[in-house]
Amino acid sequence: MHKDAFTQIKTLIIDNSNHIFQDDTGMPYKYLKKKLEWSGQFYGEDVKPVKDFSSELYQADLDSAYKASGKKDLPFSLGYQWSTKKQNYVLFSKAELITNK
Image (cartoon, rainbow, N blue to C red):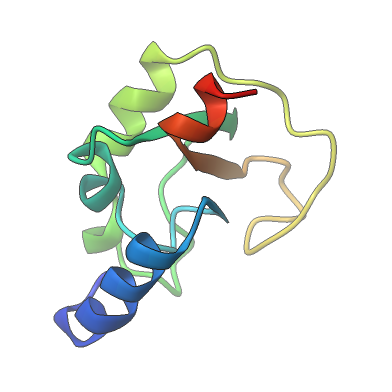
């Protein structure tokens, strides 16, 4: 979802979702960090993408967010780096849902 061809689906997901759970190959962090109504909980450890996803998909802003956040351990192995346990996931939730619990 890092290419312009995914613009419509990114908009559809943001406009119609209450939560988004994804790794770094999902929607680029820059699309969600700009939206004040979304907040993120970071899990795991941010690492550079696997070689199948070129290093141009590396997100410096996501890496900074991981380092600044109260990231939580990921209690399972999943995704492209499943064998290394160096994986990352972010749970984005609309802020209004968090404050209305």
